[in-house]
Length: 290
Image (cartoon, rainbow, N blue to C red; front, side):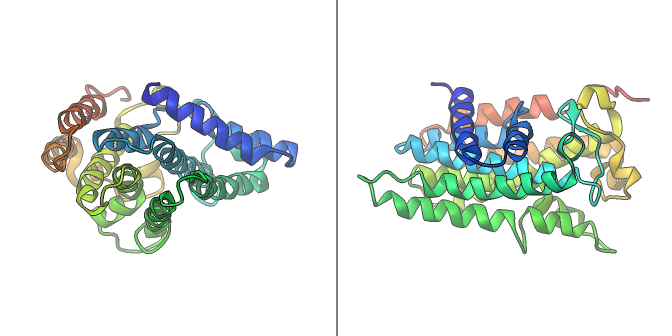
């Protein structure tokens, strides 16, 4: 089974389990929040690292990738709320709070977070109790990169500060789940997480710079979500700090460093090719929006 099919099968199972027997509208909202799934970049990176490290526990790697994506989807539901970005659409369709109401959107995000950690808790088969140590390590990594002081909650919190260090802001808001992706992929395959942090941090920083560029240059129809949000909400961005050409240069420099940071492993060449592919996809070719 290829990576995409592994991710979608595991996601479907997790959502089905979270829906079973619950309130119908909230159950529908859970599925609405995760389907269609966008690029599934974070779980793809997670499974790619696991495979590069041997993937000796594929079920555990699938659970790690699923938990990571559920956290990401939860963050999108919460970010879109009127209290934050007040977005009208996401991935080309109305946001959860518009489709189901604000209370159900809050509960949807909360439920997805719980489902993420439940996926890890259920990933240990009865005949492999030793795998519980890996599941515990995965839980620790995911929790660290989700909450305070350096996870995505902290990243959102930086937007309420009067003075922001752009790199620290990007590292928490976007980089945290990419660091979780590379580290969780390694842990799921029995490797130590620390050597994989830099790769995730660099990919995350590159993704945020690319997102800043897309927000400044592209139109809403192209992205499937509102544009111009950084300027409208006075949020820090690489384009604001460096200008368009400076931001593009930083993006390329970061991605070159990401390839160089890949730890030695049996799938090192394949990971390098994956990062190079993302580099090509992330770098803007030409402005779409005047």
